[in-house]
Image 1: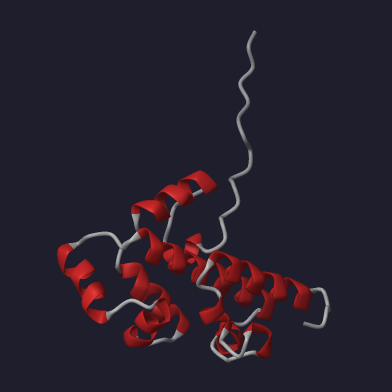
Image 2: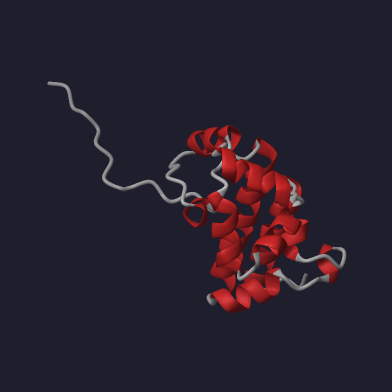
Length: 148
C-alpha cells in the first residue's frame, strides 16, 4: 500500500505579497510574477496604503508620470525593474508595520530621513535589493534591542 503525503499546513505568506495583492506562495512564484511585471494598479495600492499621493509614489519609484500613465492606458504590466522596486518597498513596509505594531507609526518611520540610511528615508533606501535587506536588518536589530 502506498501512502500519499498531504500537507496539513498552508504555506506562510511571503513578505510583501499581501500588500501587493500577489497570490505567490513560493519564491519561484514570486520571482516569476515580479519578472513578468506587476499591474500598474499596484503602484496606487502601495501608495494609498502608505498615505502617499500618486506623484509622491511615482517620485519614490523614480517613474515618470507619463510612463506610468502609458502603462495604465495600454494595460501593459510594469517593467521588471519597477516591479522589483515595488516588491522591496512592500516587504520593508510590512516589516516596519510588524515591528511598530501600528501602521501610522510605521509609515512615519518609513518616511522620515534617518542618519542610519545616509539621511534618506528608509523607503528611499530600500529601492535596491541590498537597501531593502539593510532596512529589514535594522528593524530586526531594533526588535532585539540592538542600538542602530
